[in-house]
Image: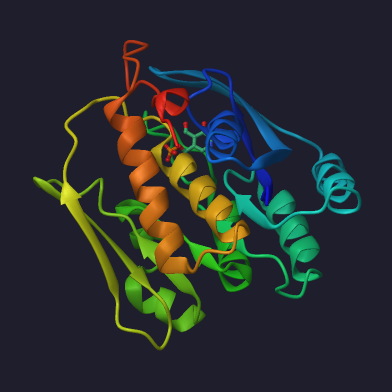
Amino acid sequence: MIPRILAIAGSDSSGGAGIQADIKTVTMLGGYAMTAITAITVQNTRGVSAVQALEPDLVLAQIDACLSDIGADAIKIGMLGNATIAARVAERLAALDGKVPIVFDPVIVASSGDELADAATIASFAVLIRLATLTTPNVSELAVLGGSGAMVAHGRAWLAKGGDRPGAVVEDVLTIPGEAPHTYAAPRIETRHTHGTGCTLSSAVATELGRGASLPEAVERAREFVRTALRKAPGFGEGAGPLGHAQVMR
Ligand code: PLP
């Protein structure tokens, strides 16, 4: 079975994050990657120098072209570009009636610290969280989204990623409504090459869900993929460099 995965996300010219990380991740995990690009970012490992969101109609047309023909076993949502695109994407995905697993990475800032979502876009995240099978905030994204209390109120599963919290052990906690929390802990991999870890993790979870894995299994395998890619980072660039997606052997 080849899971068909649609990534709705922004392009990262330097290839480490965004759509490029999504394609590499899905491909390395044996899935078939499709894309609906929301925005073009001009960036490298040092930072983001320009962002251009695409016309919302063009984003929707990409989604429809993929879903109406090849179809999808799971969908990953990353950078949305602006509030209009976010609202249109939400409307389109709501029409799927929960039949396709959706992983939402609520991208707010790049690893360089540059902003990738404005206040209006962030305000539209709540509707996507309620549509998503899993939302994957990091420490600062979770705070902006209102913390655990707000996530509980949405009534959907979420993965609180702990990589940004200092400490020798990195702990991610998966909360599924009605279940005891699933905690994943492992020694921190010391590296500055963390560009695209969030994109990679969410795409890997989507691929595994598309293959039929349960949420806890999908998160477990996705974490392992990210950790291996972190260990195999090629060391490119002067800033936060990319992961070694292509060096992860299944
Ligand atoms: N999406 C795009 C297009 C990006 O450029 C970035 C970071 O630069 C991200 C998402 C988020 O990156 P990360 O996976 O490091 O959180």
